[in-house]
Each structure stands twice: as structure tokens, then as C-alpha cells.
Image (cartoon, rainbow, N blue to C red; front, side):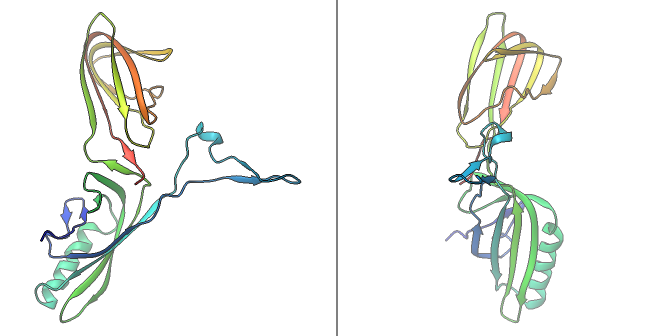
Length: 220
């Protein structure tokens, strides 16, 4: 039987002898802004007025409980000390057993519940970003030529994003009615190229190479 594990950075709880007995991630909660209508029905919903209609979310909370009955009390005390010194207070990528292909980003705290003669118990908690990021980034590798070509960029997640563009030579990009010329061997982010969920067609031409990379993210 394979132990369920919590992966915090490179720290694998199962490999270190811990059994994951509880693991809960709070639900996503949208940031809202409702203004009551004096003398009128209902409220004005201003939640996305300054974000072009895109909802924003609050941070979430992760709470996990781990137990260990391996070794002596002194050996478990050492195990606890190692976990605290390696993880506590730092920001990590966190992989949950129910979402092995995604990770959270957040600051971790390790708490000691008890360490008696038979076994030990610790808690791992974190305040995390609202998103579950895809472990494998989406990437395209293209060669630009004088004739204009197109590529369809698919964002199958929920979070809008701006990809990283890495070019060699000179590449002209067109997205909708906007265009930009990228030169030199460098990486760029073009704010106009905002990938909301769905498919987006980008035209490119020039002389050189174009690499496009981005990481999709979901709420659940």
C-alpha cells in the first residue's frame, strides 16, 4: 500500500516516516465589493470594476495532520526538529495527494501536537495563493520566417496569464489589432497578450526563433 504524502518543496512526508491522517484545503473565496443602494432594491456589485470583469480571489488555508510511530521518542524528536528547521516560515511549492499534477504556493508553519512514548503528531499549515498551478508548464517552440504564420495558444485553466516570450533574431508578433517587434536574444512579457481561459491566435513573422511558455492554473 502506497502512503499518501504531502510534498513540501523536496520534503516528502511519507519518505520521512510520517503518515498523513488529515489534509484540508479551504475553498476558493472570491473578493467581493457590494454597495447598498440607498432607497433602492439590492446592491451595486463593484467586485470586478477595476479588474476588467475578472474575479480576484482571497488567499486560502491548508491544514494537514501527520503522525509517526517509527523509532524511539528521541529519534522522533530529531525528525520533528529536522522538519521544523527545513520547512517552517519559508515559502514552498506544496503538492497535495489529491492533486499530484498541480502545486500550491504558500508560506508553511510546522506545529508540534505531541511526542509521547508511542508516537508523535505534528501539523503542517500554510497560507497559500488561491491557485493550483499545473506542474508541467505549457510550451511552444517556433521558427519565424518572412511569411506570416499563426499559433493557437490554449489556456485550459481558469487563471488569466501573460506568457514568457523568448526570442532570437527579430520576431514580429500580432495579437488582435496590436503588434510588437521583439529583437535580440532575450525574454519578454507583453501585457497585451493576456491569455484568458480559452484559445488565442497569435501571428508571428521575422527571422529567428520564438519560444512561448506559461503555466495554467485552476481553483479546484
